[in-house]
Image 1 (cartoon, helix red, strand yellow):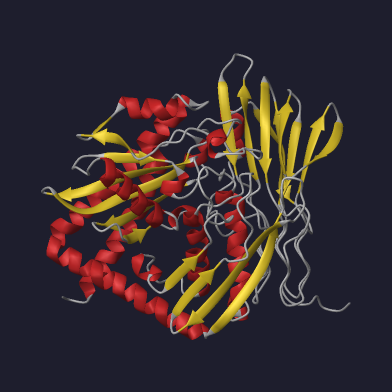
Image 2 (cartoon, rainbow, N blue to C red):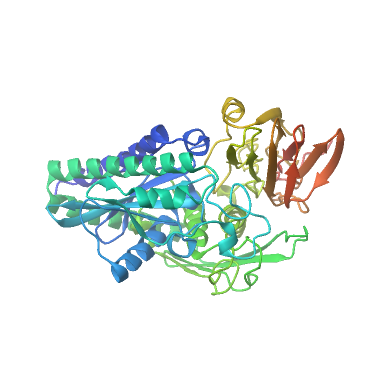
Amino acid sequence: MDPIVPELICSALLYASEEMGIAVRNSAYSPNIKERLDHSCALFDARGRLIAQAEHIPVHLGSLPWGLKRTLEEIERRSSLEPRQMWVVNDPYISGTHLNDVTVIRPIFIRDRLVGFAANKAHHTDVGGSVPGSISATARDLFAEGVVIPPSLLVEDDAILPSAVDWLASNSRTPAARAGDLRAQVAGNFTGERRVHECIDRYGLKTFEAAIERILDASEQRMRAKLSALGEGVFSCTDYLEDQDGAPNIVLKVSIRLKGGTAHFDYSGTSAQVDTPLNAVFGVTLSGVHYALRAVTDWTIPMNDGCFRPVSVHAPEGSLLNPRRPAPVGGGNVETSMRNADLILQALAKVAPERIPACSGGTMSNVMLGGLTTSGESWAFYETNGCGMGAHPAGDGPSGIHCHMTNTLNTPIEAIERYYPLRVTRYELADQTGGAGRHRGGDGLIRALQLTEGTARCSLLSDRHRIGPPGAFGGEAGSCGEHHLTHDRSHSVLPAKTTVELAPGDCVTIQTPGGGGYGAPAAN
């Protein structure tokens, strides 16, 4: 085979996955997907191996291969894959993240022969459950977090099944947006399938499949070489999440063994699963591993199944990072995943300090709002908020950005005030919240949302309100996050994890943590 051909096919598939994301974004109804880009797309071969992914959201993408294989196992156990179908699933213990992330899968056939899959995952703002936005800070089991959808037919004979759409929409506080976003995901998969067909038509199926093998092998070889270059040894780190009462009592512990171009991650010593939604299903844990390794080794290596081959992960069953069903997991996908990334990077900093920044803000600072307008219309709003990123060996950390596992955007003020009974009264960087150092950590941000009419509930799910993000090599920690409620001109402090009722005029203010500093501050 001409060695140029695998490179051409690799590039074509990478852009096909990016184009899938454009189709989802352009077709979506909700600001969370259309404006914040809270969705991810990927392509797989007939064996369910990842062959290309867009540069979307790490926590989605790292869990998609794990989730796809488990979904296919469930489908094969109960039914069969046929041409012109699509399947939908959001069960976290199958699909790999949390209930809000709805996965849609399209088997791709050529003349009745399965040749691959197009898949995408999108965060639906509300899928039912005990609170608007569906990510409750106090849920005690999975069923309090929303509707659970096992692998189910969504499209048959290339026609969307209304009953499948109704199943999700009727369990949401925002049914029209759910139906529209689900159709947008269908459009994304049709786009991916079309591009795979074009690639096979151009090069032939035999050449296409042979090129995939070369692409995966090349990524494996490059990943092994980069792991070998890091050196050998065992490198460990321990960190702590804050529990429901704000105490840093939940242990995260990893031990990484680098040897002969391989990496083994062992999470023994991590806390047992908890009865609050900070548990992270194993797919989320894997996503942190693959994100951190990609960041530390070489981001130019095409991300595919070949990158996974030198890597193994052990998280004890029943632990925070591999819970047993039906433990609640809504916050594990957002909060625990962020801290897992920092945990791994802190451990790897012991072997590659010149490549790794100080800790980021360490939280997605989730805000879920929803209720009824004065006319009785139901609404729901969700966003994560940027924080300060840790400073690095070559410079200061960026301020007010979505770090590590969340590669999304903040919702534009114009979209918030157009679609929701909310007014943004403050939106600015939180000055001097980054940790001091030879290079300063990035600053967090301040976002204040005021309810303008009707009634609403606000759920907040954050971390780093007690212990600021650590600095590196003598750098100081970033400032902690803060939440405040303004009611009748009186101000009160809110916990990091809470749900509160709002009346018109009430204002919730979120201040996110700054990043850690790098290197000792210069003497005055």
